[in-house]
Image (cartoon, rainbow over the protein chains, first blue to last red):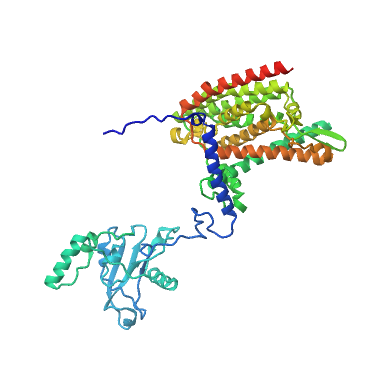
Length: 219
Length: 346
C-alpha cells in the first residue's frame, strides 16, 4: 500500500520564512562558535569530528588488515617454509613464492627444512582479504597495521622478503604485533566439522578450501 | 594637478582594498563554512590557512585555459570580464569614510560624489547579469544556458523590489547622492534610536537585503549555479583564471552590496550616540570613520557567509513566487506608506 501523502499545513511564522531562517542561523552560529573556540585550543585533535591526519591518527582496530609481514620465531628463524599455500589461496594472485631446500650451513636462519627462496607480494594487486594469513599452515604471514602504502613507482609497491621481515621487526618494536588470524568456520560447517572430529578423530582441515568458505569475522 | 593625484590614490586604494577583501573573503567563506559544518577547513597554508587564497590563485593561474571547441570565442572571453568589471566600478560612488584633512586639504573619502550615485549603482548592478548570460550563452552548453536564463529571470524579478526599496529610501533622504545620505544619518531618531536608515525603513531594509542576496546569486537564491541541478550553471565550461574571475567578481559584488547596505541603512561611518568628529583629530577621524565603515561592511560580508551555510536553496518556482507575489507587493506598500508619511509630516 502506498504511503498516504499528507500535505503539511504551515503556520504563519513558517510561511514568512524569516523566523525559521533566524532559528536556523542561531543553530549554525552555535556550531560555529563551538568549533571556532575548539580550533584555538592547543593540541592536534580539538574539533571532535576532525582528525588532523598526519599529526593526529585514529586508533586502528586490532584485526585491521594492512601491510603484510613474515614472522620470525623466538630464535629469529623464518617460519615460512615456502609451501606456496598462500599463493594458491590468494584470489588476486599477487603472491609469488619460490620454495627451496634450506642451504647447508644456514639452518639457523630457517625454522623448517625448506624455506622460501624468494617471496614477493604485489601490493598493487593485493585486495587485503587476509586469506594468505588464514591459510598459512605455519602461521608465518600476517597482515599488519601499516596502511600508508602509497609509493611513487610501481616497483616500490612490490613487497620483497626484506621489507616483509623488516615490517615484522617494526611491528614488534612498536608492540602492534598480533598472532595470525585463523578462519572462523560458519555455524553449520563448524557443527559438521566437530562431528567429523568426534567420529573420526581427524584434525581440522586447513587450506584454501576452508578458508574460502569461511565467513568473514565480525569487524 | 594635486586633485588628480588624490583621485588616483583614492581609486587605487579602494581598488586594492576591495581586491584584498575579496581575496580574504574566499578564505573566510571556506573556514566559516567548515566551522559551521563541524569541520576545520583549509588550515595548512600559512597561519590559520590564511595563504590559502594565494595557493588557489597560483592554481587558477597555472591551469590550462580551455575554450570549448563550439563555444563563441569572443563572448566566452568577454563573459568573466563583463561580470567582474561592473562589480568593481560600482564601488566608485560608495563613500568609504567621511573625510580626512591632510596638510590643510580636505579629502572626501569617496572616489567621486556623483549626485545620482544611487542610480549609478543600480544601473551597474543590472550590468552584472550580462556577464552571466553572455558566459552562459557563449559556452554552448545546456547547463550553462540554463544557468544564464535563470539568472536573467531572477535578476529581472528581483530588480523590481530592489529598486522600489531604494526608491523609498531615496524618498526618506530626499537625495540620490550616497554621501549626502551618509551624512544625513548622524544623530538620533525619535530621541533614542541612532538615526540610521534601518529604523526609518525597516521593511525597506528587509526587502533590500533579500533582493541583494538574489542579485548576488547567493544562497538561498543561487539558482544560476545550482550544483545539484545544473552542474555549475553559467560557469560550467569555465576553468583556470576565467572561472577565478567569476568567483572573484562574486565576492567583489558582495563587498559592493554590503557597502551599499551599510551606507543606506546602517549609518555608514557613524557610531551610534557618538560623534567621533568632535573629539578626534582630523587625520585620526578620517581613519576611524573608514574603520567603522569597514567593520559594518565586514559584518554584512559575514552575514552572506552565515546565511549561505544555513538556508537551503529555494526551488525555482518558489524564487519567482517570492519575488513577484511577496516582495513586489510589499515593496509597493512600503513605498506607499513612506510617501504618505512624508506627505503628512512635511
